[in-house]
Image (cartoon, rainbow, N blue to C red; front, side):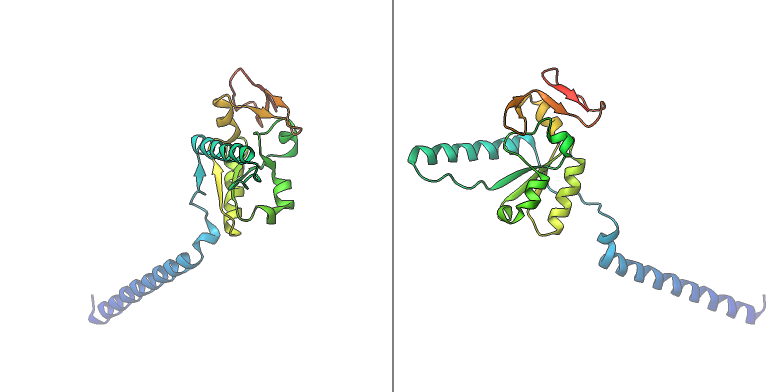
Length: 184
């Protein structure tokens, strides 16, 4: 090789390395600034069945105590929101839950509460929870959602508040205990 060729080759190598480093630095800066716009890799906070049951039990005890003392019932610290379709919620819901439509229509009433969202298995409610958090609302996704609720053989109610054993499971893929009648 000639000396001139070696000099050109080294210059080319240094230029290539410089350009690759610049691309890497710019990529890192762009991802750190805008990466969350393109990929939601983090999961929204979740609440387990046991944690939800504890919240509901505590609230019920506060309500009973207030009634016995003759004072106004305390406002719950959470609101349970069923994000399933109206076709699903018309079959049954977890007692005390409201529909997504009702929540969104009266959102200001619930701003100071933690929203606990649920659906069939937790996927749709997880997406909804993430959107609420982006809006500055404190929210958690009920892990396992209505399928987990049914797995513990807990009560369901119709939209009118009557006890039922029917549950909309979205598809035949999701199973519930024999106590319930799955519809889809």
